[in-house]
Image 1 (cartoon, rainbow, N blue to C red):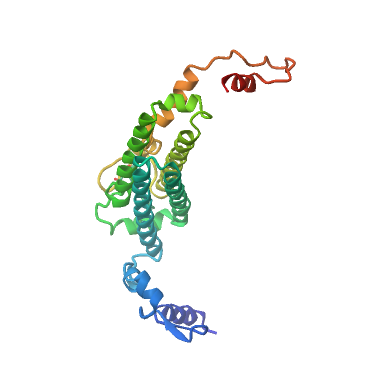
Image 2 (image 1 turned 180 degrees about the vertical axis):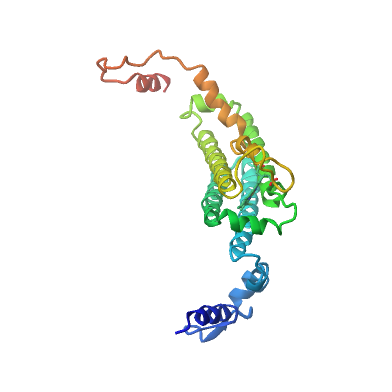
Length: 274
Ligand code: HEM
């Protein structure tokens, strides 16, 4: 059996319409309702053909960037919906939109790991053909930053309209249950976004290297990514933790090993507040 021909004929078959036995139709001509709605003809023509790839891994490289752009676009769109709901004091719909943003950013973080399978040598070849392209030029990345900025402001305005402060919300979460839940959902968004950039950093490290001497095609030193990846989207939400810890006091706790009363000091405090 000639295995070389098998792979070659499979590749050829994958490039042609495929007969689906259940549908009794050929799939892949762009004529079926699914293909028309999803615009598969245009979508699947957006990647280089197999014979145009500089290395076989280039298909993954292109698909990864394209799909990350789509998810970033989708996350920014949902974030704008969240802003609208926050501006209209609709907390539950805002939370639903934020849930979706968080799930999408989780996908970005998990998906980018597939590029860990790209060897440095293959990446060096791909790199020759991407001009001076930089991640900073990603439309989706810029959209999500703009959306996060607006969402952070919308949350701040809602807290103001409620006549309270972020610090008070966090010090008294039971008294501001919905605002506190919103704040924590923003934190989920931010921390997942940062872990996406941490995954990206590890990817840069394993493909190009992180060093002062290693520069992106636009001259940006890869070492600078280290500080940027944990730059928060919602700084105030992180700072409130710092403020709380700064004003923390040991008073009211048990000494290690000391006998504990029937009522813990924390719940006693809650009962007194109620
Ligand atoms: C092997 C794959 C990758 C390598 C080697 C790589 C390399 C780099 C480098 C060197 C930078 C520094 C800034 C610059 O480019 O000017 C950068 C930034 C960036 N890259 Fe990538 N990248 C890869 C994949 C991706 C993917 C799949 C995305 C998804 C959209 C992405 C998005 C970004 C973003 C948003 C930045 C700016 C980050 C910041 O300023 O903190 N990169 N990348």
